[in-house]
Image 1: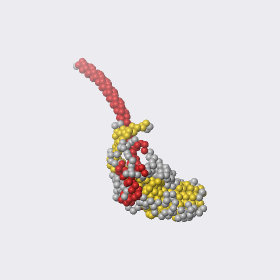
Image 2: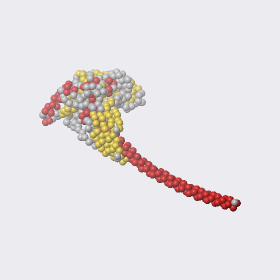
Image 3: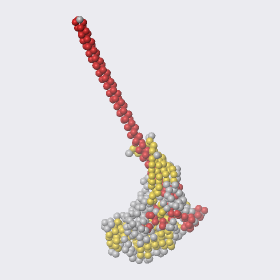
Image 4: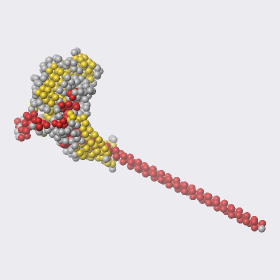
Length: 518
């Protein structure tokens, strides 16, 4: 019995040791498998991380490249809109609107770019203003070019087109302004960007705050007789009055003898006659010795009032070219308007004489002499000399000249000088702007403002009345002539149209009214 019990205990011990050994071996196997699994998992994770990093790097490179292309495409689209906007502005008012105080125009910085940009053929414009924008910037006007720069780098193409134009060639009875819609697409690589913009008209009131006196002078003034009656005078430092130099601080009063209220100003307003081309209803041009008169399509009132249709009329200067229907029509046109031409002039670009009291806005690149008597609504911008009375500024006259834009209901007659059915404020007070002087003889009354880069001379023994401001490079009041200055342009609180005139033109501009991306 005892022997069997011992054998069973020995058997139990052997089994127990076997179970312990088996358990030990099992634990070691599981730990190895777990370690191997961990290594595999870590390897997979590291692989995934490496793959993800490579994908992200590739995507980042693609994204940066795409972003660069997107930006270049958008830039190109904006360049296309800017180019067509500049082109439309040239047709509306085909001169630079900015100028220096000496009247020298600053050329359009886009002119050379535009020259190679437009794909449609351009032509000499017989007019400007809304009529020209409607006639020569119609729907379908397009432009396309490649744009390449090395620094900063840019490689793109652009195609822009006018999709709509609501301006009218003929004057709009209610003065409703038009709009031009432009679509422009830029492309760079695979990127495409399309912008749609709307151009409209705005009026920039650039009345300079420096015009605070009845006379603003830069240069030399010779005053004789009973001239000013206490008129205030603003003069730039370095000017002289009666050979007495003007100096001092801007805004400080200065006196010379019996002349009082002289104030030193920092500058004078720009006088730039060329900027008024877009407002002219009659253009008198030298044309390289082949003088011509241009009446724009928008000035159809000229035909109604004077029997002269819009168009271009060459002035006959020699007997050999004065035959045929065209020459006969031109001769009748000049006769009906009382306009004649003579060679020479103060700047050798001819002298035009107006002997009829026209209702007109006249631009000339030569001289203009107003010899008629009576009342007229007429404004003149000329590169040469503007005079009243005889062609040499002598004799006497009796005329009363109102600014053209003050003519009753002028906007229904000639919308070039209007904005949203109302006369442009700067033009309501504008009478004369010249580059080479203004000569007025006694008996002349001007209801607006006058400005010149040359001498303004008052001749004769009678009275001359200016109901606006006077801006000049110099003054010369001769003999016992009396200059009666009623107007004074102020920096604020303007209450009379004749006090709002500027002399540089170009105040009405096309501008970007809205833009969106498609």
